[in-house]
Length: 428
Image (cartoon, rainbow, N blue to C red; front, side, top):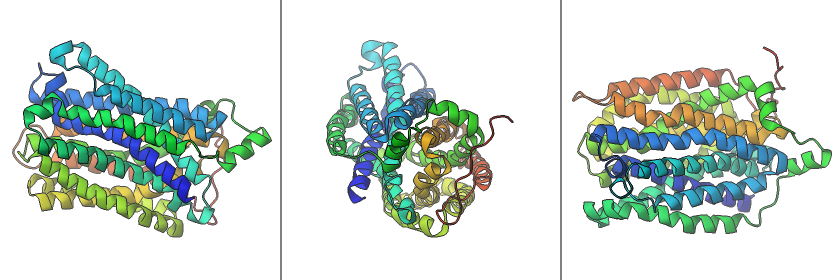
């Protein structure tokens, strides 16, 4: 289990490194380089628009790779998704700017971001099922939480490189070539991840399905027909996690540097410190999920998110690093209270024959609802006025309340306490 968990963690860390480095670049530099004819605000919105394209691609990736995972095995998904994301990320580092290529530059950027999202849409389902379907039932949340640590590590790697570059280079050097370095480094990380995953075995549950001839012929069709309500509820429930995380990790960077005048180094440092604490806390929260259940922690995380959004915005607006760190930390601890157990919870909600598709599509649809639009909406809501952007806090609180209602309608799945729900009837 330790070897499997390590392989899942490293793979998700690499793929989320690729995904996050784009979000940081969008907040700091892509607007003026690829949309120079726009005003600073509109340029940032346009850069976040290409950022959103990755989220829109993720459900498509989960459908494509989910089909592969349910038909041919979880293991092939781990290789194909990592290869696609890594190649697309390296290519971003070679795209000429608008000054060189004109309108073709942002078009290329958008295309590569879409391919990034396509690969990442398949990664989560494969990595999570690798651990969830090997893990003993009484420690499934703990072992499944290791892929959930991967995003924290990926974020710290991506922003650590960005922080070193912004601190060590002049602004002109960073804009000229420095921002490209993390994208080039993704190629080396992807090769390392592929080597690590080369010796992994297929999961026992998939092998049992194959031996019994019970693999799904059309997994997506079965999910939509038999589990459509569950799919919508899981997407709505997880939306708050994406909204909170990308508010902290992407929108807050742009708001702090552009509106508050805080240096990008200070903003990145505050966010990275909060993410590091969150990563350390993840397995300990998952242990609580194995003891008390998945649903109670998800409800608690949603409630905490709803209560903390206004304090977080107020602390951010002070522009004082210790207070900004406190605001970010509170938000991310609420986030991980939910997402530490999600890697066990979602697979348990779906039957094994369509588990890779159902869990991955629900998880990535939530990314569209909560992650794709949040930086755009938050940027628009924070424009104008000299006080704290209360509109952003209100928006995030509303998302948290909607997710709370969705979690309330989902069942508990803790082994020994509750059973997975039966498939729903096809007709309404």
